[in-house]
Structure formats: structure tokens, C-alpha cells
Length: 434
Ligand code: RAT
Ligand code: ZN
Image 1 (cartoon, protein in one colour):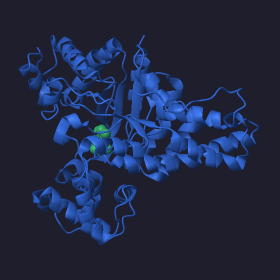
Image 2 (tube, protein in one colour):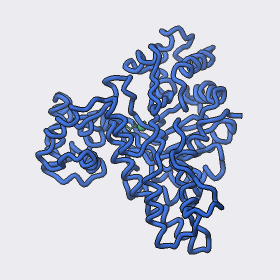
Image 3 (cartoon, helix red, strand yellow):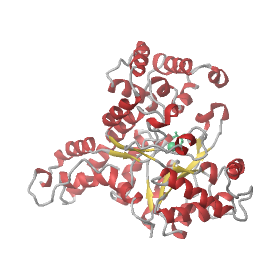
């Protein structure tokens, strides 16, 4: 991973960055530090150009993002069944018309499309769609990726890589990818909770596993993980879990998590990421947009952190109601790193609340956000919004510190933002688990 481009000067060097700031200077300095510090985007669904067409980018992909599809069905008479029968261009036309022409794009996701168009100097009014299509069609993905990441202030993109995804597999089997700004993650949904539907795939690849994950299955899953660790060199392993996730219990998920995935993480010195709280397919007619949220039992996280002190956990919970408990558990277990405000949480009002709560309980020892981008250009608006939301929250924290008699300098702000945007993650993913 590229190292932080921002230098933190020595505290005693007398440079302006070490001067005590006046309260009214704090917001400007915070904004400036946030704008100039490159972020590591620790969880996305983006792919480097090597992966070809599974890497999504451009206006039609932006418009058919599942966050917008969910909103579309609220403002259109088109049924989901009829929508899925349309071509990609027809779907994007329909969404543009319903959410951008016949309504104002004031929701978070629709406003994001406007911000992307604006970032490229493209028209944002109703008639702008064709011009946007022509602009994106004229880009070459190799140079476009660099431009987008630069505009977004993102130095590194962490992907989500499923070893059982038939579209990704050929890339990994023929040498993988080596784009310096993209990093792999070994995503284990199909193995850890989709075992009944997927164990045969492992069996067909020569791993001695069975339907009940019995006998030497655990050992063989570890061999599978070792093979994929070698192939992908992932920064961490990851799984998304429902609101009903429990640990420990007698499920195959618990067994494979505790006896295969976590020991492998320890062996390779990498963290395990748990994204908890999805309620899958409450409305299957909406496909990817058909998942919802539920409050999870955070004792599962407590039990994992306590039982496996030599594992490092990255944990993000989807329900707003679970956020306080997550921050409290992070105070109890230093092998727990809370991260991100994803999906239904990634709205300014909620990000603000969660980030404030985390700072109050954890200082700068958490990872405030990841983009969860599925379409390349989304990193532009998602990180713009994150920086905008974080600015007053951080300013407020430093102004309170100042009011209480503490010293606030540009250098100190920079050190904290480096932690939040980069080094908390770099430290979590580097080094060996003891
Ligand atoms: O935010 C999303 O796009 C969701 O659909 C999920 O993919 C979630 O981010 C996940 O990684 O499971
Ligand atoms: Zn995701």
C-alpha cells in the first residue's frame, strides 16, 4: 500500500502546524486536513481493470445502482418484473426520468449521481444524460481509474473477492491482478453461510468436504483458504452476516468460522471482517435492492472477541441501534476495530451521529468510513460526502478540547486524520497475529 502522502512535522520544529489554533481557526484547518489526506477505502465492490467487465463504471451503472433501484420503484409505476426485462440503457433511462426529471434528486444516492456529473463538468439538468453517456464512452478505463481515484482523494481501494464467483475466478487462476492501488479481500459468504449450496463446488475442486462440514472438512476448508490466500494475498478475510447471527451456536457457520477461518487468519496474520445486520431478501422482487436491516445480538461479537484474543476483528453493524454497543465493545476488546457506516447508514445525519459517538467513546481508534462503492465513480461522491460530514464533527471535538484547556494544533489534527483515514487500517492489516 502506498504510504501516506502527508508528512507530519516534528512537534517542536516551530512550523505553523505546531502552533496552538484559535477556536475560530479550527474548522478551516480540519476541512483542509480532511481534503488533503488521501484515504484508504477499506471495503468496496470495485475491481481493478484486469477484471474486465465485472468492474462497473460510467453513467448507466451509476444510475442502475441498487440503492437507486430501491428508490425508483417508489416513484414509478413500472413493476420490478417489467424493469428486469429492460436493457441496461432502458433501465437507466427509466431511473433518470423518474428520479432526476420528474422528481428532484434530493436523496443521498440520487444526489451522488449529480455530484459525479458535476465533478466531471457534465450538465446535471434533465437533458444531460446523453452528454454524460458520450463522455463516459470516450474514456479508457485504465486512465479513467487513476483520474477518479485522484478526484476522490483515494489512494487505495480494497476489493471484495469471492473465490467461488465464476466471473472472478478466471482472473485469479491466471495470475491475479497487480494494480498497485487495488487490494484483494477473501470474501467467504458462500463458504461460511452458503455452505449447503456451495460445498459441492469445493468438493468438485478436489477438497475433501461434505454437506455437514464433518470429518476432515474443516481441515480441507483450511487448505482451500491457504490456496486462496496464496493466490490473492488478501488484506483480510470477510463475511456478511444476518441480524440473527449468533456465536457460539451449533451452525455450520460458527463451526467453519471458529475452526477454519479464524485459525487461518491467525496463521496468515490477517484480520477477519464481519459485516452484521442484513436481512436478506425481504422483498426478492427487488433482487439486490431487496435486502433490509435488523438489529443484531452483539453478544456474538463479544463472544468472538473474548474467545479469540489472538484474532483481530474488523466489525461493521448495519443497524443504527447496534452502533453504541459496538463502540462499547471496542472499549472492552482491543482486538475489535469498528469500521464504516454502510448501506442504509451512509446518510449524513446518521454518519454524523455515529462518528460523534465513536469519537466520544474511542478517540481516533476506529475507522470512520468505507465507501462500499459498486460503481467506480461513486468514490467521488461518497468520499466528498464523508469529508463534508466529518468536518463539523471533528471540529466540534477539537473546539471542546480547546474550551477545556487543551492544545489544538494542525499537526495534532493531521495525526488523528491519518489514523482515521489510513494508519488504523494499515496497522490492523499489517504485522502478524501473535
Ligand atoms: O452496500 C451494499 O452494496 C450491499 O449490497 C452489500 O453488498 C454490503 O455492502 C456487503 O458487502 O455485503
Ligand atoms: Zn459491501
